[in-house]
Image (cartoon, rainbow, N blue to C red; front, side, top):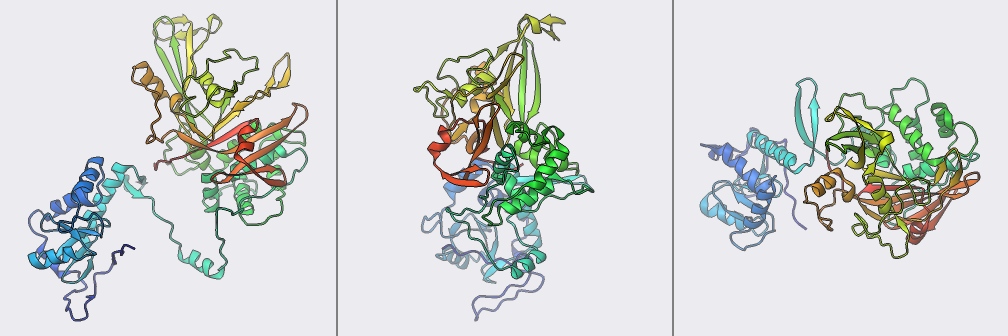
Length: 543
C-alpha cells in the first residue's frame, strides 16, 4: 500500500496540498531550487543519484542497502527520502523527513526509490530541467552497468544511447480500437487459448507437429501477436505473413481445428523438396521452415546482431547458437578454432552404427541435470557428452597444421560457444546408409530442466586450466533451460505418425495429435520416446 509519488514530469506548475498554504510556484518551475544550485551542486546531485537512488554497481547497491535507513526510526521502508543539503535519510510516510526539513530549513529532498525531487515549501514533487537531465544521465549509466538497457544507434548523428525496455503504452489509434472492442479475454492458469488442433491434409502430420511447437514458443508468440512483422515482399507468398495469420488463428479462442492449407501451399512453393503428399521428416521440415522464415523476415536496417549468423531477424534472435570446433594437432598441439551458427543439435543414439558408444555413466552433466543411470537408460546428457567429447580423426583424415606446415593427425572437439534462446535437440532415430534403412527405438531419458554449463566452450577452457568444478550453483542461471515441447514419432520408417507434447502453462501439458488435443501428464511427456526436444532459456538477458 505504498503511496506513489505524484509527479508532473513535464509541468512546471504545482499546487499546494494544504489549502491554507501559499505557494509562490510560477510557470518557470519551483523558485526554491535556486537556493540549492550553488557551488558544486551538479556533482553533489550526481553522487546522490549514483550512490543512493539508481545504484548501478553491486558495490553501490550494497552501500545503499546498509546505509539507507531512517535516521529517526531505523526503518528501511516507508518511502525513504534523502535531504539534498546534508547527509540525512528519513521516512516520508511517517513525516520524519518533514520534521528534519522544518527544523533545519532544508527545503528539498530526493525520493530514494523513484528519484523525484520534493519541495517542502511547495508541498509537492517538482520539475527542474537541469535536475531532470542529471537524473536521466545517471539512470542511463546505471542501466548500462546493470545490463538492463538496449543500445540504440542513431544513424544521423552516429551516436549510441541506452534506452530501458519500457512497458507497452497504447497509441491513440490503439486506444480507439480498444474502445470499439470492449470484449476482453482473461488469461488464467486453466485457460486453453492457444490450444487448437490442425487438420491433416494427407500425410501432413510432420508439418502439424512442428507448427504446434513453433506456435507455443514464447518469444515467437510474443513477436507475432504484437504485429511486429513488416512485410516487404511484393507477391502474396510471404511465409512470415502466413505464420502471423496462423498465430492469430491459434490465439483467437476458436475451438474448431484449423485447416492449414495455405501454409502447406507456401511450404511447397518455397521448399520444393517437401512438395507432395508423401510422409516427410519433421526435422527436415523444421529446418526448411526456419530457413524460409529467416529469408522472408531478414532485418535490413543495418543493425548488428549478437548471434553467430549476424542476422537480426526474429528467427536468428531465438534459434541461432554458436558451435565451436577445436581441431588440435597431435604433434605440436596447436589449436585451430572455428565457430559456426546452428539452429539445432543432432545427437547420435546408442544402437546406431556410429562409434564411441557406450559412454561411462555419471560423467559431466548427469548429476547437474538430475539424471541417473540406475535404470540403465541412456540420458540426454549422455548424448551431449558424446557430442562434445574429443574425437580422434585418424590417419585417413589428416589436416594441414599451420604450426607444423605439414599434414598431421589431429583431434576434433565440439563445444557450445553461444547458446540460443531456444535449444532444439534432434535425436537421430532414422538411420540411412548404403546397407540399411531403419529406425532406432532406443529410449533416451530427458529432463524437464537442463543445465548446459558442462558443454560450454568456457567450461572446457576452465577444465584445461584446472579451475572448473562441477557444482550446482543455484544463482548461476545463464545456461539453464526448461522443456516446453516434445515431438514424437510412432511407427516404422515406412509407415509412421508424428505427435507433439506442448506445455501450455507451467506443469500443464497437452498432446497434439493433428485435430485432437488431449490433456497429458508430465509422466506421459517424460516417458515418451522423443524425436525433437525443444528447450527454452529460463532467464533472458537484454541486449
